[in-house]
Length: 74
Image (cartoon, rainbow, N blue to C red; front, side, top):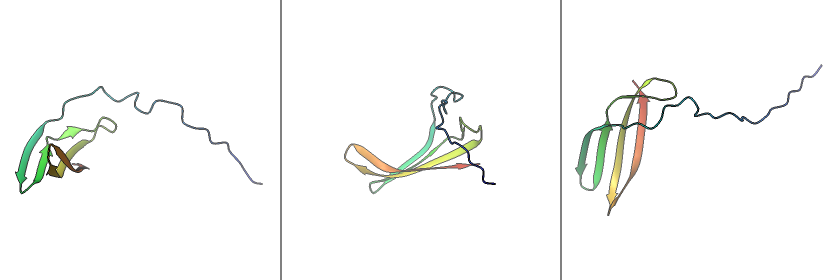
């Protein structure tokens, strides 16, 4: 026969076990020709506990920096 199942929405808090806010330290920043590059100190991902590395690249536009953060497990 054919089986069916009811799928209910998740009602728990997905962030319940995540620690409170913490400070991440930027270890390197360079700016050249309106472009900004940077790297954060390695840190533990609050969800999986894995060590992470994050870099960013952006453009300076007046008082604003727009760009992209890239994080990877190390």
